[in-house]
Amino acid sequence: MNLPRHIAIIMDGNGRWGLKKNKTRNYGHSAGVKNVEKIIEAAISNKIEFLTLYTFSTENWKRPKKEISFLIYLLEKYLDQQLKKLIKKNIKINILGNINKFPIFLKSKLIKAQKLTTNNNKIQINVALNYGSKEEIINSIKTTIKLKEVVNEKNISKNLYTKDIPDPEILIRTGDRQRLSNFLLWQSSYTEIFFIKKLWPDFNKDDFKKIIVKFKRMRRNFGGLR
Image (cartoon, one colour):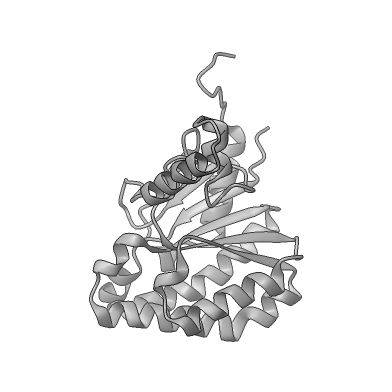
């Protein structure tokens, strides 16, 4: 029976959810943040060791400035309100991506969250921020060359943002879109991908558990035969 250690999620559909409710896209983003808390609890209940959340991509800077500002505000608000709870619940926060482009006040809070939770071990939440997989792979190759290491699969993997994290066994994308959107391209070479029609705020604990149950029943050959 397959037991997943690492689940990655593309949390798509927040803005569309807000508009469907005759509200704003930002209303949907707020609902999406609330749903993150529920899915973290579901991951803990199902004994998942690593949960990676695609929170803000390198391409998201193309969005309207007001929407970007609101997303930054939501992230800052979440850290202010939830950091003590995360510490108390033994949750480790890890950032994937280049956060230097964010405002200094947010960058400082992200670094603080990583530092204060570094020894927590119930679950590791990898927050992908200003993350782009193509950029990550290019940077890894550059680092490998700079370190005068052989450019091979092992060393490229070692120099990725996810160097100390196992590749995800499961990748979930909500929002009824069937693409990876520059997310964990290297790490997902043998990941089981689940495309879900529900928009992210509607994705719930039962949906999460059903995917894990389906995964456990899968026969994974990794290119071979059994």
